[in-house]
Length: 437
Image (cartoon, rainbow, N blue to C red; front, side, top):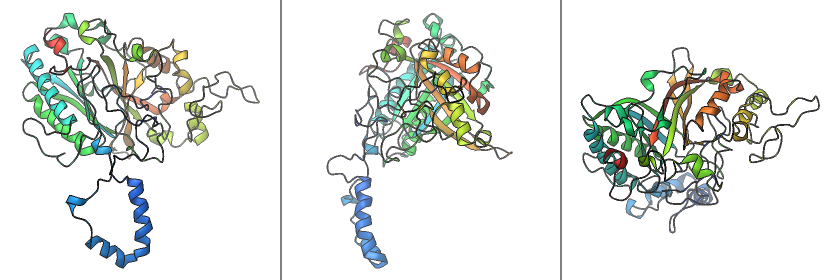
């Protein structure tokens, strides 16, 4: 798990979040006329304690009617844009709920059926991301919620092109990933003709979109695999901060930032890209990485910090400073030992230790229950974005394979690589330039 994740509030194709919040979550923000959660709780504390039990009963009886209730939060009102230069869900701030799902085209389905399916999916995504009901057969699951920053992102797997007779349009960057020594891959939960990423800041909104996408597939495609993930909820911390993973580590300090001059070339295929239909698109590597939490949690905090190369409490490098301080790879202690161990995860994944290789990480955590031995099936749904996986993900993962201290505590259980085309213009559907070009 390279030491980069999507913690910055990037705004391409998204209604801009509070620029002062590094994770894209406004600081206790609420629209004009809307009482924030913090203000509401403060008011309740000031009045409820004085009223006591009797006052509480009176307050309940005198509560305003639903028509006069003030909204508690603005989270549900936040909306991402479907149409744009890039697809949503790539530079969108981390969402609290997510679903990843891969489909295989049904027997006999080809280019025509795939085009009709992408058209249906695009209409549904646009409507749901705007907080509207699905065009046909809406389940009503999310009828009480706003858009909740919903994003729906579509991609094509290597096998899609043979199934649709479009082999000549398959990008060279979509060649299968090489094998890695840390792989313990379940092929039934890997790859796929089509891939959909769904994210939202409300669980019902995310599920509603998942169900709509599945229903839209109809007889054209069937689900190959599906995974559910989560992140911290917006506003859960006193102030915006980089996310933590299930190992308790701050995860994402060195994620590429849009302010960096090479951000675009690292993440997105150029407008003059090859093939043309991938212009302004990106490549997603998707890995289900199980964390061996029982083993990890037996380590002391100091041992965990040596594995990662950063302080568990603050995310600061072991060489000193704050979370964003540049790591001093040459610093030694009084005994002449490197302060940041040579096999520390944060050292190995640094772009300057990998020929500049970098990727935009945008993961979800997962927990799929406890197995028969009482071991949690939990970890990271690793999703990273880059203009070319051969220059982004592959060199970093190869280096991790050769000596990352974290490798003893994780297991890569599934893998996929998907070509995610640029965003759809108004009136277009995602992938139209490929399927109708």
